[in-house]
Image (cartoon, rainbow, N blue to C red; front, side, top):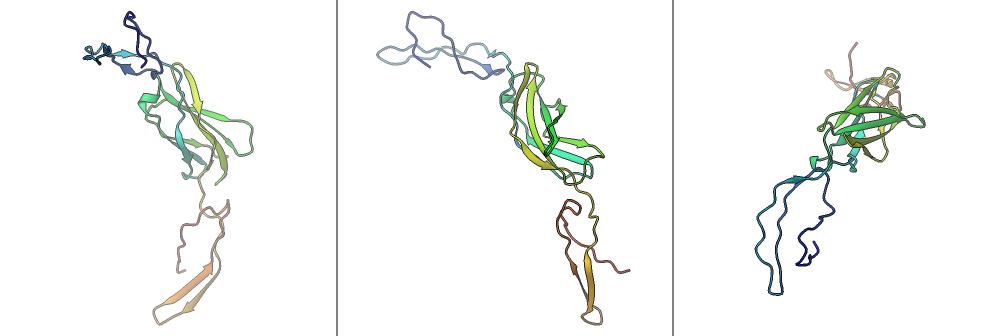
Length: 194
């Protein structure tokens, strides 16, 4: 802080964070040095303000068929700027112009799940997450691309063949399923004996 003239008995402290408790001390100084600090003032909380820090690490994906799962890193308490803090989730199918908006009225929330039977598996969505409190709506994150939940593979592997290796072993082979929106990410195969 800047040095204040010795005849001045008040000062305005600037660049404080909203909705945070502070206490203050005053020290006197002269050409010889700095004296002992005063006793701390009573705690004083600054006024609330609209939040300005958006959630980080907005991502998601996974979930079940017909679900869009959106996740984010919660905003720390010291950056919430007031009471009644929560999150605003906005999303739209990639290429659409209309945003769907949802509100999560929980300080600790880090996930939102949108369920709708019309969502096709592995559909890309543009997603952004913002913040609000009793003072108003704050900043939104930048847009992230999140994919809706997968469905079970709709295509069977092709070219299955079996070769006898020994009296007790058979080697089974097949053509892998290529990744696409209808198959999703194939995590494994199951070999069954009819």
